[in-house]
Amino acid sequence: MQFDELPAQLVAAKPILEKINEAGFEAYFVGGCVRDMILGEELHDVDIASSAYPEEIKEIFDKTVDTGIQHGTVMVLDHGEGYEITTFRTESTYTDFRRPDSVTFVRSLSEDLKRRDFTINAFALDADGTVIDLFNGLDDLKKKQIRAVGKAKERFTEDALRMMRALRFAAKLDFSIEEATLEALAELAPNLEKIAVERIQVEFEKMLMGQAAGRSLMTMVEVGLLPYFPGKTGRIKASHLLELANYLQSAQPKNFAEVWTLYLATAGLNADELQDELRTWKLSREVMSTVNRLAPAIEKVEGLSVWDLYQINDLAETFLSVLAIIGVDESVRLSIAAQFDALPIRSAKELAVNGGALIQAGIAKPGPALGKILSDIEQAVVNGQVENEQAVLFDFAKGK
Ligand code: ATP
Ligand code: MG
Image (cartoon, protein in one colour):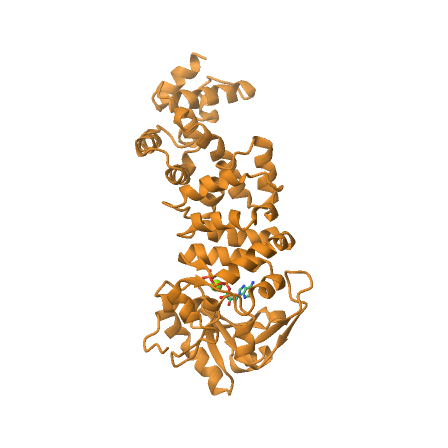
């Protein structure tokens, strides 16, 4: 397969391949960017693989940064862009099911492509626009299937994360998982326990944002991966995941905050279990706080007061998206959205008075009583009992 016209990102990076070629080495675009180009999808990152060793790459280019020199990756800086160039390499014996014991640089493209996870991730594209497809990945793209390069059982034994990656790409591209690859998934599911939660998190998040997230989630349950998932085994019941899978048929979360709010707020956990689960997944502080603030609101969505909505109004967009995914009636969502819009203030900072003003006006003295007055004012304004105007609020405070 030959491409006469390349996407703009690859056109911009082509001189890098050519420069490496001129120096007498091979260089190709590899991985996701070639797959996405063939599919006509938007490209994320442009990865380059080369027969040149890192030291040789550094001799060819003026500006380089050692971004991952131990794995053979050097970043070349060109017209304000950074391009990662990785030396062809093989990975030998994975005694721990997750990291190769050693990485060996090689001069052969086919050796490098052989170590890649799936046939559709194992293309290379040369500077002339020719696709190198050693494992019939083009055929798999046509069949819309995820198939391991080589023997699936061996590949999942080497690196158990690849099982999550299979589910992630199946969800992202709306592909099925080829039979032998799926069989290996079912057989080797217990190995997932060996994988660091952070690496599973990355794949799981991308999986849930994929267009066929619901199907991947169901597959996860069917092949028996759930008991080996981070978190206490069986805490999240398969029935909850299947319910979530059902929701995901029609809409998917758009970002990590939505992913985790959706996943954990619908998982049927009590408050302690939820905290445990948040810690287990090692989520960012920001995501944890979002889940903690939205989970109770999602549980009582029909009985939310204006004050409840005020408390989460900075997360309104995430909240409404998750409600849509879990099938809350449009009329209910529109009414909640209208209530968010109608809030007289978004935060206490927008109040027409503050502690200083109350003290200056001689209405209150510094101390705990002042805090109470301010919080009464905030509640009264939010609930629409008083106007957010200084004179009105002074009068209100005097009456306290
Ligand atoms: P995305 O568009 O989501 O970034 P990608 O295909 O570029 O998709 P990456 O995770 O960025 O995925 O990995 C880049 C490439 O490296 C893959 O296409 C694949 O060839 C290879 N790769 C990544 N992780 C593994 C792995 N665990 N085992 C084997 N090959 C892998
Ligand atoms: Mg990538």
